[in-house]
Amino acid sequence: MSVTNLVGNYTIIGSNQDETNNTYKGTLTLSVDDNNRIIGKWLINNSQKQFGTGFFKDGILVINFNYQGEDLNTYKGVVFYRCISNDILDGFWSEEHGNPAYLGKERCFKVKDTSFNIN
Image (cartoon, rainbow, N blue to C red; front, side, top):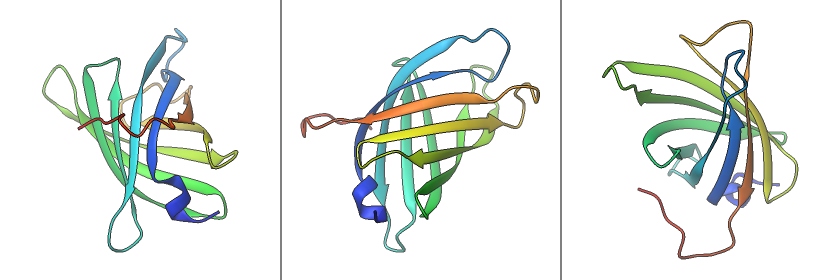
């Protein structure tokens, strides 16, 4: 599998980095820059935009991400995805101000519809 196989749009379902086990849904768009670095854009629960850059090696995708919280502070974290197939990513994540006793979880499913787009 190469980095270009990851390019596309995904639907996601995940759970937050805390004891509540709250779940969320969203979308993820992956693209590649001129240096074959991954560019990630998430839209969580139709409201929260997150952005990140990362790299892919040996079936593992790592993206450092950030987003602006409701309090207008910028939050940062990292997500690790294992590529189950060309269409499924299974991941876990942590952010700097999350509960260190827990990891967030996320599963991504590639969307085949080419009209799908998030900005």
